[in-house]
Amino acid sequence: MPKLAFVVVYGSLIFPSNDVDQTQERTFDAGYIMVNGGYVEIGTEEFPYMSKLTITMHGVESDPYLPVYGNKVLAVRYGQLEMHGKPRSHVWTDLDVTAPAGSNTITLSDVGGVALDWQVGESIVIASTDYNGRHAEQRTITGIINTTTKPRITLDRALEYEHIGVSSTYGAETIEMRAEVGLLSRNVIYRGDPETSATNMYGAHIMLHSPGDESVVGRIENCEFTDVGQAFKLGRYPIHFHMIGTVQKSYIKKNSIH
Image (cartoon, one colour):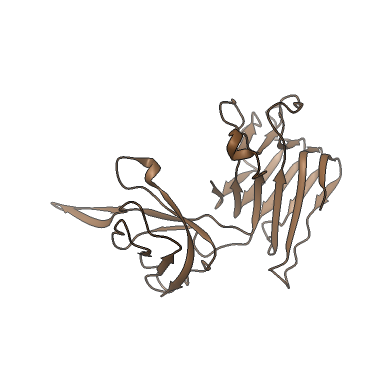
C-alpha cells in the first residue's frame, strides 16, 4: 500500500478483519491520521480484529506540527478510536526457576491448565532481577513444550544475565522473587517507521484530546506498540489522553509497548 501523507477522518475508517484466514496481513502507512469527529475501528471489544495489521507512521521532528497534536501522530478530536487485537491466553507470567546467564531455555510458572498460546516466532521479554533495569532481555521463541503446566520455552539465543525465579521465607513470611516474562507480539501493530524512529529517538504516538468533557473515546487492547514515543518532547508519549476528563469511557489494557 502507498504511504499516505495526511488522512482526515470525518466519517468512519474501518479495518475489516479476515476471521477465516487469520494469517492474512495488511499494512497502512501514513504521515498523519487526524480523526476529527470521526470513528476509527480496528476490531471491537465484542468482535476483536483477528488477522494481522501493521500501521506505520512516518516522519521526522522537523515535519509540520498539528496544533496540540504534533506530527507522526494518530490524533483523535471529538471522535472515537477502537483498537482491539486478538485476545491472548496470557500476556505475562513469571519464571518458575532461575534462568542462569548462558541458558537458552526458560521455565515459566504453572499456568494452571489454561494452555499458553504463545507461538514460535513471537517475541518475549524477561525482566531484569539485578541492580540494572537495562538487563531485561528480549528474545524470540524457537520452541515451546508443556503448555498446560509449566511451559518450557527455547530462545533464539542465550541469555546474557541471570534472571531469578525463587521463593524466600523469612519467619512466617514467604516472598516470591521471580522475573516477569511478558509477551511482546500482537497481531495488531502500531509503530513508527523502522528506518528513522529508533535512530532519531522520534517515534509515532497516539493523542486523544478533548476539553475535559470526554467527547473523545479511546479503547485500546491486545495491541503492540513499537518505535513509539518522542524523546525529550513533553506530552509525546506512546498513548496520551490529553485533558479529556475523568476517563470513564476509555481504557488501555493488555498491550505491549517496546
